[in-house]
Length: 181
Image 1 (cartoon, one colour):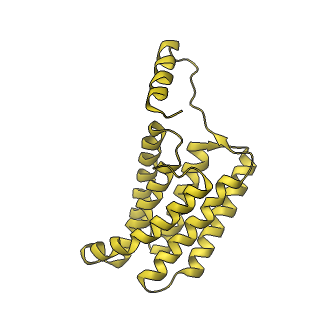
Image 2 (cartoon, helix red, strand yellow):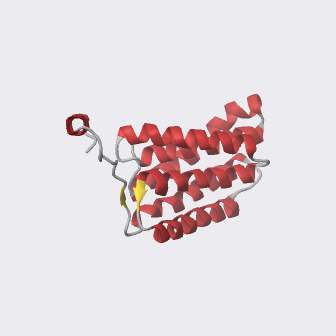
């Protein structure tokens, strides 16, 4: 399922929040509460950016980039709050740096407002129990849904300069057959 639109991104926010209590029920006893939350935040960030991709081929690449960045955040972050900020940064880098393009100043402003606003709302909604954390996850992704209402954003196209024209045509034909275009 893709959530590269406002309404579908809202649906993802609800699903991500609803899945957290189930994940926490099974993961907390195994890895501990803080590590479970950290893993969930980084994992859901990778799933989110993969679903933002307009094509499946881009989804796999973007999920790999997000997972690699998330692993670095998990290893280096001293607290869950830092992991949450790192997961938000992973979303921003993958969304505006890999999947979509706009002018640099606009992309930076949009990501700063959306990620900062999402983290702020999540902090406001967060609490000590699992339900409050689920609401915080919902709040963060609720704000992220507004990315698709920002003007001046377009899909980042893959560079075809220097490639064999036959390979470019073949890739285009495969994309058409898979229904990705």
